[in-house]
Amino acid sequence: MSITKSHIKELYQFTSAHFVEHYDVQTELVDHLANDIEAIWENQPSLSFEQARDQSFKKFGVFGFMGVVEEKQKQISKKYWRLVWSVFKGFFKLPQIIVTATICIGIYTLLQLVNQEWVFAVIGFGGASLMIFRAFQIKKHMKVGFEKTKKKWMLEEHIYGFGNFVGLFNLLIQFVFIMDPVSSNFLIFLIAIFLTVFSLTIYITAFILPSNMETFLEKEYPEYKSVTI
Image (cartoon, rainbow, N blue to C red):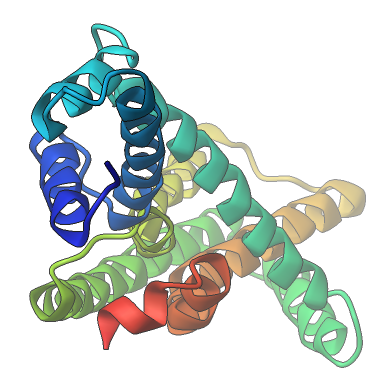
């Protein structure tokens, strides 16, 4: 016996019923289950599809597909940060480095001329407000995309999950209450570098990556374009 298209459809439903919600992870599991079921049939041809499927599923242990999902999350997280790093490096090459240097010098100048607490407060509150607004935009876009395809992708959620960074702006706001004014030019310069790197990272995660999400997904998942048309 061999796996049919009907069996494949049932396997997708089976993985979904066992709390695997991302299509890319489902696809990996369906491929694994299908191959294993055919191997089981070679030794036990009398088994029904459901019996062979359940026998294959038992090999995943008492926690089922949870271990596979967690491992996939780790892989996608690493891939996501490699994407962030690849874009981030571009800001330190010509001509982008001119913009980066200008931002750093501007922040350095503000820290010398303006009350430093106000600099942290403005960047903290302003950045958090911008991120919240962007998060609402992305959430709406995700909802429309899901209603169209009925599929979730783990890398997509990581790219669109930049809202988790909103909390980081609280760190800047906290500095307003705990830090003393810095007079050393060297320390001010280090703070300016930190704020520049911080701002670029937020810009990359909230704007650049989401705007190029489909390109990243098509590269990561060859089947992405065909199943989202």
